[in-house]
Structures are given as C-alpha cells and as structure tokens.
Length: 228
Ligand code: 5RP
Image (cartoon, rainbow, N blue to C red; front, top):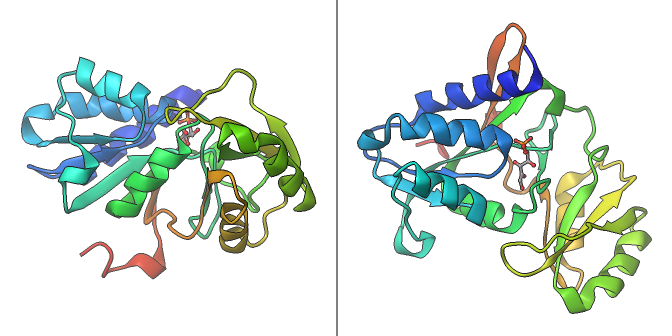
C-alpha cells in the first residue's frame, strides 16, 4: 500500500467512531479529505460538521454535509484530524496545512480527539517536521528572533496566508523533548497566535495505518472520563 492508501485506511477506520445524530469536528489535510469523503456516504445519519478550515468547509459543503458554527454548539463529541508527527505520548505537531489555529480551537472543544495517520507519522521525538507557528504579520521579524533564541531556525512559509489572515513561520531543527512546556513557551511570545504543538490537548485515540492494518491506540490519561 502506498502512503495515500494508508491515509485512507486510517480515515475509514475513524468512521466507526461516528454515531447517529452526531455533530462531527473535522480537521484538515489529505488524510482528513478521505474521512470527509467517507462521512458523505453516511451524511443522512449525522447532524453535520464543525470545520477547522476553509478548505475542509468547501469539501464538506460540496458533499452536502451541513456546517455548524462552533459558537452555536455547547457539546462536540468528537474531532477527527491528521497530524504531521505524533509521539508515543499522543502529542502532535500539526499545521502542515496551515490550519493549526482553527484545528486547535475545535480540538479544545471536543470531548474526544481521534488522530488518523499513516505509520510514517509516528516518531520517537517530535521536531523533525518543522514546527509551524501562526504569527500576526507585523510581529513576524520579532517572533523570528524569539524563536531563534529557543534554538530553532525559523523560516517564513513562502506565499502562505492563513484562513485568519496571518503568516506561518516554520521552525526547523528543534528536538522537542518537552512538548507541553515548549507549546506554552512559544504561545507566550507576543505576536504568536498559536503554534503547531498539540501537547496540552493531545489526541485521545490514534488510528495508525500500516501495511498490516489499522492499529488503535488509546491514551491512558484520557480514559474513561474524557470519553464519557
Ligand atoms: C493541517 C494539519 C494536517 O493534519 C497535517 O498537516 C497532516 O496532513 P496530511 O493528512 O495531509 O498528511 O495539521 O494543518
């Protein structure tokens, strides 16, 4: 199986988590696109979706899935999204598709975060994938200086403007041994909107596809209260 087939396998496995009448939080990216396509086949059974990006909204709408405004719902049972890297503690780097801020907002509301990945995304230590940081445009140079002080090599992502009208700085060369602390530290830099570390709110379930099938891993710390 090639990587895209593995992404599709993980996305298809996530459909088993969808229950009748649910509003489904939907992430962004090529793995999630397979999930959206699968969701469309069962759209009559769900109430609709909360989207994490303009790209996912367009795909959901095109397939006839009703979109809800996050501010209008009090309870979101599930959020399904991919990752650029995930470690054994269910911490992730996300934002390869520049949707990290809205993804983090939807994930914060959701009771259960189901991460769907091909096996290449599982790493011992986060940081080989450059860490995306969303930045208010007028703060770019100052934020780059601060990120360099943390030991990384910040590089502005060429031609990228986020759905929120901001820029993305990708930080190369980090070895992230304490993702929770680094997530907080970067978020304290003035001008940073958010960064792509999803450690303080990591995944609850990882569906990891390899040539032998889709392995389900459940985060011990989030069971069972978070899952209700
Ligand atoms: C988008 C993301 C994606 O989840 C991440 O980039 C993985 O993408 P893909 O499924 O295309 O490999 O965080 O901002």
